Every structure is written in C-alpha cells, then in structure tokens.
Amino acid sequence: MKREHFYDLIEAHLLGKLSPQQRQAFELEVLRNPDLAEQFEAQQHEHEAMEVLVEDRLRAQLRRWSEQHPLRPAWWGMKTVLSIAAALALLLVVGYLLRRSGEVATPPELAVDAPAVSPPPPPATTPTDAPTEAPALPPPSESKGASPPPAVPTAQQLALSYLKRPHFQPLNVRGEEEAESHPLSPVYALLAEKKYTKATALLEQIDATHPQYITAQHLLGEIHIARQRYVGAIPYLKVVVRQEDYLRRKEAEWQLSLMYLYCEQIEEARQLLQRIRRDEEHPYQKKAHRLLGNMDRLLSK
Amino acid sequence: MFRKPYTEEQIICFLKAGGKDREMTLHYLFVESGWRNAALRLIRALGGSIHEAEDAIQEAFIVLDNHVRTGRYQQMGGLKSYFLGICRGRWFSNRRSVHRLVFSDTLPAASQKNSEDGPDAYVMKKEQKEHLRALLSQMDERCRDLLHMYRLNYTMEEIAQAFNLGNENNARQRVFQCRQKLAKLMQQNPFFNEREP
Image (cartoon, rainbow over the protein chains, first blue to last red):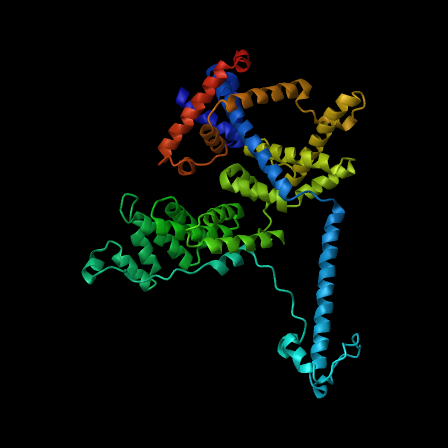
C-alpha cells in the first residue's frame, strides 16, 4: 500500500468513519505492517492533539450551559409544579371574582342564574357609582366562563409572527425595453404569477460568476419562504448574508435570523439578532430588539 | 419546549456526524433530556454532593461524546445507561483522587473497578494532554479553530465557508498546512520524540 493510501485510511479510522469490520481489519493490518504502524502512531498523536482542542472547547461549552441551566435537587421540580399550581389557582379565583362582580353590575333580572355559593360581599355600590365601574369590567361575552391563560408560543410561532411573507413584484426598471433585456425579467414575471417551480429552475441556473448571482440566491431563499419551506431557505440566505450588497444583506440577515429561530437554532438566531441590534442603521434594528426580548421571555418559561 | 425527544439512534448519528448536529444534540442531552437529573439522583444516592455530581456529569458528557464519535461505544445496552455508568465511574474516580490526598487507605472498593487503564496510564495520559495543550498554545487561533472543526467532521465546504477560504480545495490545503505545523511542533517536543520507537 502507498503512503497516501495509508494516510486516508488512518484518517478514516481516527475519525471513526470505518465500519466495525473495517476497523478490525485495519487494526490487524497495523499489527502486521510496521510502515503502517509508524504512520498510524504519528497521525494518532495529531488527532490526540485535536481531540484535546475538542475536549477543552466542549468543557467550556458545558460550563456555560451549566451556568445557564444549573442542576437543581429533586424537590426543586416539585417547587416549580407547586408554584404553577398556585398561580393557576390564583388565576381561577381572580377570574371567578371578576365574573361575579360582572354579574353584580348587570341588572337584577339577568342575574337569576347566579351560582348557589355566594361570593364574598362586593363593595357597597350605589346606583350612581355603578356606571363608573362598568367600563373597568370585562365585557359580558368575555366574562362568560374563565378563559384559559394564553398558551406559550413555540419558537416556530414566534418566528412566524415576525415573518413577512415575500411579495414578488414585477421588475422595477425605467422602460419596457430595459425590463425585457434584464436577465431576471422572466423570473420576476413567473414570480408575479406565483409559478415558483419554473422560477426556481431558472434561478438555479445562475452560477456564482453571474452579476445577478446574489439577487438570484436571495430570490431562491424568498421563494422557499413563500412556499413555507423555511429550512430550505437557510443555505440561500446564508450566501446573501456573506456579501456586500447592503439592502439584500440586511433583508437577508433578518430573514435568516427568523429561519434559524423557526428551526430552533436558538443560538444562531440570537447571535444574528444581536448583530442586527448593534447596527444602529439596520432597518430591522428595533424589530430585532423586540424579538430578542420575546425570545428571552419564551426561553425563561 | 423546543424539541421533540431524540431517539438513541438519532443521538448516535448526530454525534458521529459532528458539526452543528453534534452541538445541537449535546445541548439537547445536557439541557433538555433529563439525563443530568438522572445522574444527579444516582450520585446523590451514592452519597455525593450536587457539586460533585455536576463535575462528574460534565466529564461524563465529554467522555460520552468522545466514545460515540470514535466508535468506542459499541451500542450494547442503552446509551443512557452507558452515560450513567460513566458518571458513576467519574464520580468514584474524582472522589478517589480527593481521598488519596487525605485518607489514602480508605478507598471505596467499587472505585477500583473503574480505573480501566490503571493509575500509571492515567497519569501518563494527563501529562500527555498537558504537553499537547502547550503545543497547541503555540499555534495561531485560526489553525486551532480549523483543526477543531476538522476533528469534528465538518465538511471541507463548511470549513471553507466558516473561514472565507473560497472553496473546498483551499480548505483542504489549509487543514493540511495546520496539520504540518502541528506535526513539526510535535517533532520538536522531547515528550513525543522520546516516545518514538
């Protein structure tokens, strides 16, 4: 066997890419072949060094996660459950009291189906104070039945609440002639008619050397968003984010952060949003700020 | 809240795949899977404190990641049981190192089983790691990042993207250059030279 072949084989072994049978055969060969054994030892040392890097970084990462999510003894879980139960009970009591006071404010003939258990006595009201208190109470239709507390949104729901679905408009150029000669003109025409498959096929033919490559990549990302294929949008938006075109990049940064959030790649989403928030001139700076706040609330729950 | 539970096959597959998948899987295992709490209960039952448990658990995650990636985990028994076994071993071995300083002859009997490589090998390995850390500190940050990604099975395309290297061939070349630097540093270090046959 040649040394180059040894190199690849040893790398595959050290990176855990060999099947158990191949691994066994390789280990036998190392015992038999001194040249292979020598090269194996050298490469193994290099991998041991790389593994130290991996271990040290993972250790630092675990320490960070551990600070963010400290270990709690078993009773801590019970405490959380009890707190939630207490909060729910409190909500029910408040809802019940509000409902009762709503019924008190309604005319006596409508309050015939009041529950048998009488609530604590309401504060004494005179006919003249009743109208002033009425607007503070929830409207009768809302007060019927205790409405459940709003569900905590998922990362996907949060991302979608901020996402504006792309609206493809016809090409905005000076004259009809110019529009016809523009290389993306047919694509825009297809997009305006929502013929996404054909538009995608045309856009995918545009290679990296083409002057409209970045626009094409962004459009491909937006087509995925329009078709609600959010995971598929990420690679295209990543290309746009890495280049210089200011407007496309800013738009793509915002869209990419939402896609990351949708795909639950929380750290990536957070980093990108923080970058947007730091950029005073970024068109999505305020939205990024709000979204980060919402993410923190969501994660803390 | 964010993720469905991973199956054992998925965990193994993602850890082996490396890259972002590995990172997300480790985050899931560490934060959301409940494995840490199970390990905490185990170590508390053995008489350990919450701090001892935290140390043992973190080390166990590092070992688990390494064993799965390098194929040392043979998929016999459940992965969670394997992890808890490592936690128990790590806790005993950490405890033993503390006890050695104070009461050298009162080691728990079970801890003897967990020294798989023996004390000499353990010390040797530790010393080797220190030498490797010293070598790595002589390399530039970029090379260290690059080798870290390479070891974690990031594709050359991903490496090229992360370091703005243009294409896979450039990435491959940079990895090779960094490997050569590392090999050279190793050759210059007597610790590794003495070990050569």
